[in-house]
Image (cartoon, rainbow, N blue to C red; front, side):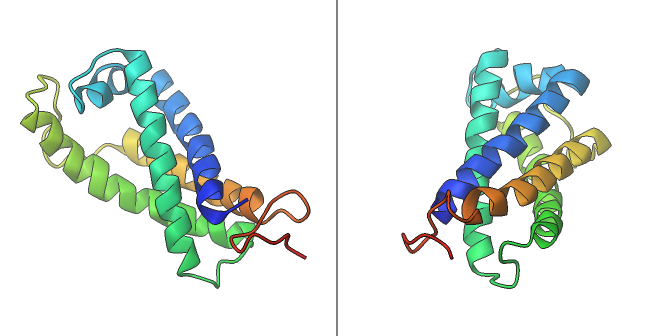
Length: 154
């Protein structure tokens, strides 16, 4: 599997875990907050947007991974990198961007800035941890996946 494809797969897996956590702990975020970012409403729209963002951020993780060859296929190193990635996503996107964006589109339930939420941090860390664990497994598994060069890994 090409690295960007591994990023999509790992991002979707991490997004599913994070989405389930949100649905169980703060359903209003997935049902109202996330859809409001694009002027939509409803849980299905929230899930589609959330999973699309998750896949896109998985590709971003793959791009960063390519710049850090020391991570390689080591699952523990990738989990650590994924946790760091999740923490940065929380700080930049959830704490900073989302409150401003929701206020800009006139969403009545927009959180205040900064949006410091431990529930959100835990969700983003879960996303990053699953992303980091799944990425090398999806991308570098010998015999079943294609590497970025298009050749089978040895």
